[in-house]
Length: 146
Image (cartoon, rainbow, N blue to C red; front, side):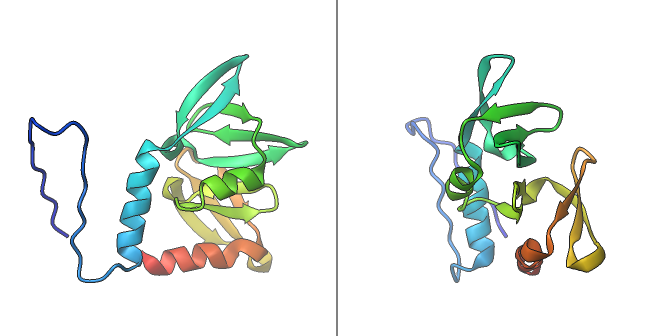
């Protein structure tokens, strides 16, 4: 892969052009990661609303019908439902990992097979999560693309 950066004072916005032989999974992954850089979500903490970069969110979890964003060292609540977030993030590297959890694939440090076909996931902040057997195939498919 070659990367060229051209600086032009007359430009007002960043333009990215991808030249490739074929629009394959690798190209789609690059586009997804670029889109995630500009994506924002709002979360509430201590009665204040914060604007969060989606790429900084490790995972999203629902507990007692309340939905939370987990970053490296903070937790924010959102009024959005898990299925709404799943829809918003479907073009990014977030994936459903269980009935009440969505994980950012780019924030995974390591994976380990677990009992009954589940996968134990260690996040970049060393927190451990479990991908249920029902969703394990999603992560296996993502690993094949890399």
